[in-house]
Each structure stands twice: as C-alpha cells, then as structure tokens.
Amino acid sequence: MSDEQTGGKGLMTDAAIRISGLRKTYRGGKGQPEKQALKGIDLTIPRGSVFGLLGPNGAGKSTLINILAGLVVKSAGSVTIWGFDQDRNPRQSRAAIGVMPQELNLDPFFTPRGALEVQAGLYGVPKAERRSDEILELVGLSDKAEAYARTLSGGMRRRLLLAKALVHHPKILVLDEPTAGVDIELRQMLWTNVRKLNEQGMTIILTTHYLEEAQEMCDEIAIINHGEKIAQDSTANLLSRMDSRTMVIVPDGPVVDLPASDGVDAALRDDGNLVLQYRSAQTSAEQVLESVRTANIRIRDVRTEEADLEDVFLALTSGRADDVPPGDQDQPHRGMHRVKL
Ligand code: ADP
Ligand code: MG
Picture (cartoon, protein in one colour):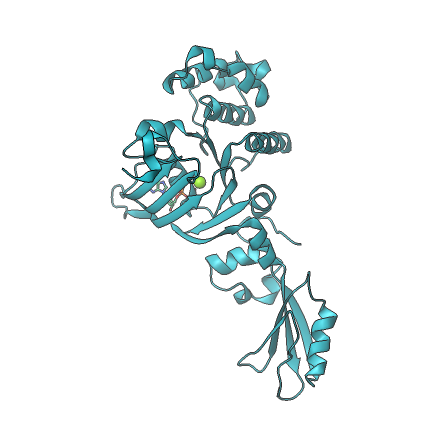
C-alpha cells in the first residue's frame, strides 16, 4: 500500500489530482482511424488551487475531464483523486470529485430539485445531509426548483449542471468550458461561485480556451495540445513571460561589441540584426537604446515586439510566435480573445 492510501484516507499533504502516463485512444468507427486523444499526460494539481486546463479545441481537455469523472475509460496510465487511486478505490475517488460537463446532458423529465435529489441518491448522500435548496439558491435556480428541465433555458440548464456537481460536497469541482457561449450574468454567477467555493477550501479545475479567463481566475495553468501537456506553470510566471519585450535593431555597420547592460539580454542574429530582450517592468526602452549606444552601435532601424499569453500559447502550440507574418499579428487567432497588457 502506498503512502497515499494510508488508512484508506488521502493524506492532507497530497495533491488534489495526480495523473501519470495517461493515454486515451478512441477506437475509430466504420472506416474511421483510431484517435489518440491523450498521449501520455503527467499532471499534478495542488489542493486548494484554481487550476486552469488550457488548450485549443480538440486538444483533449474534455477527454481528460471525462476520465476524471469516470465517464470515459482510459487506455493507460494512473489517476489518483484526493489520494485515492481511481482503479483501486473507485468509490472514494468518485466521491471526491464533482464535474460540470461541457455537454448539456439533462433528463428533461426532472425538475431541478428532483434532479438534485436523484444525484444525491446516486452518491449516497444521506437525506439529513442533503442541501438541495441551499445549492439551488447558490446557482440562482430557487424560483425554478419545480420547473421541468425541458422548459429551462440553456443558461438555466448550465446552472443546474453546476448544482448537480455540488450535491455530494466534493473536495474538487471540475468545470468543463463553463463559460463557452454563456451570457454575462451567468458568467459572473459562475465566477462568483467559483471564488466563493475556492475560499471555502474547494479545489477548482476548469478548462477553457479563453486566455483572459484563465488569466483572471487561475493560480496555475497547464496547457495541452494534441493530447500532450506542453507547459505547466503558475499564472504569475506565465504572465511574467508576457512581460518580456523584444527590441530588434538593424545596425548601421557591423557589430563589434554586444551591448552589456543589466536586465538586457543581447544576441546577434544570423541576418546581422541585433535582438535585445528585456522585461518592461524592470527596464525601459530608453535604457535598452542607451546600452546600444554605449556599445557604439549606430541604429539604422528599430522595432519592438511584445509577447502576450496568446503569443506564449501560440509559440508553444504552433511553432514560434515570430513565425506569424507582421501583417497578421493583430488578427485574432482561433477565436481566442486577444490578451494585451
Ligand atoms: P477538447 O475538449 O480539448 O476540445 P476533446 O477531448 O473533446 O478535446 O477531443 C480530443 C480529440 O478526441 C478530438 O480530436 C476529438 O475529435 C476526439 N474525440 C473526442 N471524443 C471522441 C469520441 N467519443 N470518439 C472518437 N474521437 C473522439
Ligand atoms: Mg471540450
């Protein structure tokens, strides 16, 4: 027995989620090739965090979430939820997590209160511990408690899905693209509740392809693309990458000495241009130019480039960000919001 399962209880010091070598291959249908949706993901999600799983459509986010939820069977690897191995302790691992799925899959013949009671029954929540009314209040569905699900708007169904994810008081709440296509009011309700639940100690995992949202909500972010994890870092570190600026100088004549100045990273490119990297919070463009003049380099032309999370994302997902032709730089990419500092 591993430490993680000492006494059948997860250790308080353990991660919320520990995923190792996770693979999923969907079998192809008639004439369809099989699809490797997850290609060996390792991921540790700390307890108490608001964790963002970021990636473009088709990256494998829902597949990963649905494996956590027990809705999709993994092909290989291990998943530990709140210290409980999903295969060895399926009941405990399932009890630790509540998932608000991306799909609006609700039984049209249940009312919100009825749906919550059934869900509570499925999770074995004793009658005395059920808090349907409190949860309906939380998600703003009190006045619809007795309405049939089929009469609820898309937004109300989404609220009900969140309510269902909460009935068994999970340690971890997972939201799969909670704000894709929802109105501002619902988005605010979601974020208010996510913050409130997190302050009460719940670990939150959300997937999104909106960078702004991840930036605003998450302490830590993992980026996945084509079924592989390509980055994981604190949001602060990702933001500090965005703080990086690049100045490209076309020198008037050959460069003998590289500028040497604190906070300026200088390199000479094959094309003879001088590339200077610096952080805008620490170094001004004027200081960078001064370091160039001090190195006796005459400037024929100069331009600056700034990175944003989207550039970081693009650099990681589709080659280098500076491969984008200059004219395309301000075009929105793949429907994601521009995030400018
Ligand atoms: P995301 O949520 O990041 O958009 P998904 O996990 O939904 O990505 O999908 C990852 C890949 O797996 C996609 O190429 C998708 O077409 C494929 N996929 C998802 N579900 C199935 C399925 N049930 N059968 C076959 N392929 C699937
Ligand atoms: Mg998805």
